[in-house]
Length: 425
Ligand code: GDP
Ligand code: IMO
Ligand code: MG
Image (cartoon, rainbow, N blue to C red; front, side):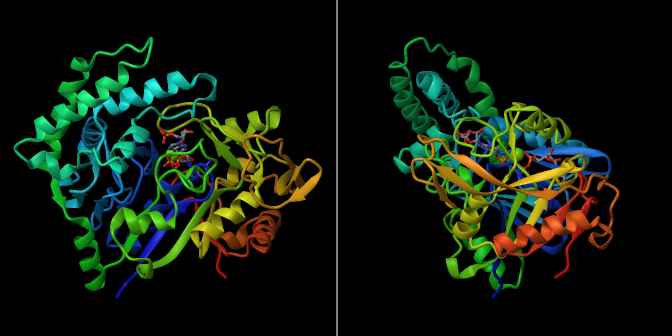
């Protein structure tokens, strides 16, 4: 029986997951999202066109691939409808190529309102949520109040909806100075529900396990990143789902023994969007330069991303938690114009040198300890083979592999599908 391979982010999201899933898709029969929702923004670029997907798996543009939205995902019918509409010019038969779990939870307009009200109430200590209603929807899921895709086919769906909305309106009434107009938001929601009804909904756990039995190949596409994981991220500045390999099991209904390769993906440096600790963050001209060269602005919210040097203690942690078997290094070309590149190997906290993320990371001053590596200082974007890469890039990759103890099999040198190099081992 085949196994499910997993591709996920090892940092704070936006590592380039969409691009690599698109590159790997020809090797797989099925691409499946297992957690998160429209807080994700996955960018794919080919034939001169840039696509950003939020809920739909990144295999949707390849003709022979099926795409599954698993039970662990949360779906906003409004954003989902817009995503589907954006695919219209590409003549994709969405009904046959996209399968949606009956058990995926629905984001209601009031979930979005609750997200905004909660952030407003937190003031300065806000999470920096994408305001897509992710937290409140997962809260209703674990609180056993949620509505699922399968519910939309039941005759009393509207009744269930009204009941949950009543509860939300009650909570919102406790938020001072929070104004909203629910009646304005509801028509788009119910339009989205009608669209969902017209698509293919399935019991995806059966579908995927049967597919494995039949010898089909599956790639699970992570959203967000390990350092935003609800259990292992920089809590409370995290998202509300398990973004790690284990999330694949619960988010798709595949057993741990059915997990195959785990591809961990990271940038040649580091970014974060939203609040929370970021030990290697650069507040100077170098951070600004990385943001500019890497065009580091959120694919979902357009917010500028915070930028800094690569952070090995956090990467080692993420590799451990996920059991990564291979790595992809992204956006190497963004460091094309640096004489030297810094790598954080340890942290110093109150005079002590450590190489792990401390529990109280958000409350203590963390000083990153750096080693310097020589930069390649040339244009990588035209490279077609890793063999032809400048020695300094090869040295950087080898240096990281030595510390991380996992092979870096892919090196990305630009946003396009074709700008992807294989590092043979
Ligand atoms: P995801 O959320 O992990 O899928 O990543 P995002 O799409 O949010 O952000 C990654 C951004 O970097 C997108 O704009 C990609 O087009 C771009 N990108 C991906 N790989 C590379 C690369 O190797 N070089 C450059 N310059 N850009 C890249
Ligand atoms: P992809 O899949 C980067 C961040 C938000 C915020 C925190 C909580 O594109 O890598 P949420 O809306 O989930 O309640 O926000 O998590 N965040 C992301 N950052 N990439 C993402 O997704 C993210 N999804 C959420 O900025 O700090
Ligand atoms: Mg993104």
